[in-house]
Image (cartoon, rainbow, N blue to C red; front, side):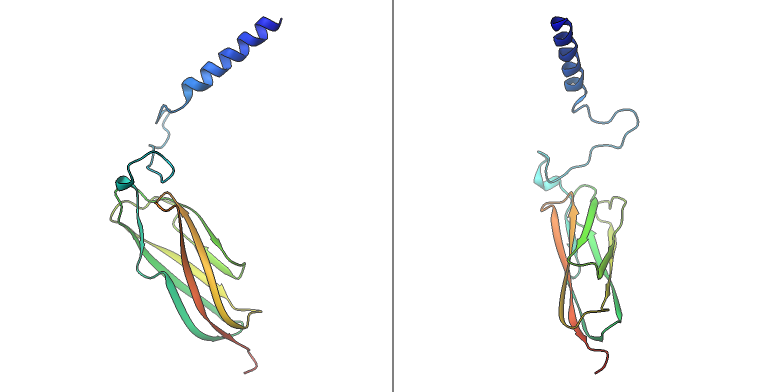
Length: 149
């Protein structure tokens, strides 16, 4: 009984190992260069923002600010944005979910809701991508003035 069990486990291990690193099979998407892979760094995507900081100036508390951060993939393989996280719930990013081809451009729309905020603001949006480095930050800055002023 023990020998049969060991033989079954060995068979499973062999089949799992043989399935790894086969590339594209069964209609799945082609492999994309990533910063974490052993790919040549010169082949990776590069995200290049026109501006990495937007100063919205002075606004009244309760106003919303929206800004489109424009970027281009200046690298040699498709850029994939896998996540966009913010420093607080008052800032909401909307990013392209499809790959951005080399030479193509995209827009990351960010909306800041100043309700309940007062004074100087510095809001960060962190993008996680397959570029190198794998994280990039952009910023919204400005001043929120009390609605009673």
